[in-house]
Image (cartoon, rainbow, N blue to C red; front, side, top):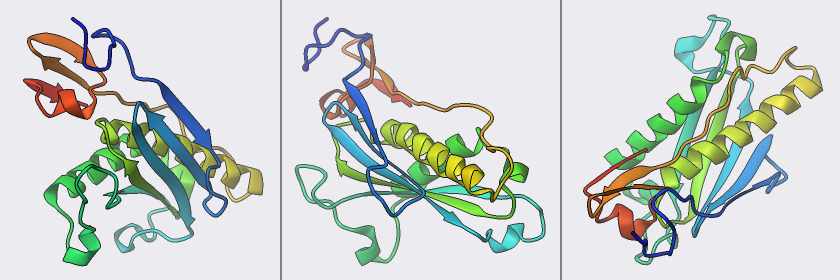
Length: 189
């Protein structure tokens, strides 16, 4: 089977990570997977959510958004609507949970890391690109916390990556672009 972009069923799209893409965040990565581009930044907040105060533990959370020009048809900014869609909430939870599983919250101390994933261009795999880029941004932010002396050891105890798989025309395929994802019989991350 030849796929629309010429890849074999088990072939990934070209992937790259440009670290320190921005200067203001503790960690930032521009991740490119095929034609999909996501900017992931990690910011340190020296406070935790109210429900965690006094626990001695930190927290890692994620926010996700698609910029208006990220797809062929303009995507409305959810802030203008006053609430996030169920899709956005689901994606934010997936990214946050994926990143938290790799982190020792006690070693983080009572601080929060917010990982923002902003889709600049969407051609399938925005969730998985966000997890990969978000992890690298988190890694770099936590490394800088250790280097500054704010914490003694890096709270990350494992690595996280993600990829999509699906079934198109009865054939299992890896790393679906939008044209496959939108017509797949089955897809998952």
